[in-house]
Length: 169
Image (cartoon, rainbow, N blue to C red):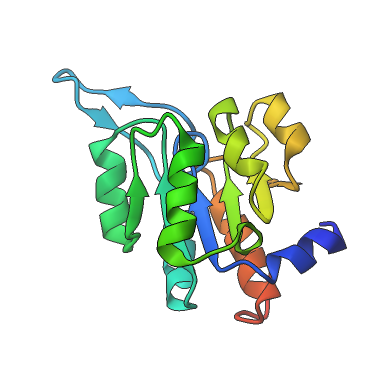
């Protein structure tokens, strides 16, 4: 990873995550009753728990409204869970105001065009290898692991290492 990005990571106080394609692999399963089921990585979940215990704030920001995502946020202790948001830039501004943050204190991880307005503003922008090409070209860092397969944990390990909260990246 680029040394300049590692320096910017040291300023991060809030981690904002897209859901579909980042916390999941982007697949939505529907059962015969039309209820959705999503797969979440246990490794990502443990990483989010470690971030919260380290004193960092975590939020979800998704274009889709999903009861499964709301339940996952609740299970992980993620207090900021914004679902069904088509204008992510507006909600992002509300998050900054709510927590008294500056752009450089936020890391956002997204994978699609709807994420670009936020990715372009934050202190550190991250994506996954399964993201659309336009996004991958604009972010500070593309993880090695794919969305839903430990990409969030990969990013979290680097954040915690940079903050001196763990000895291994």
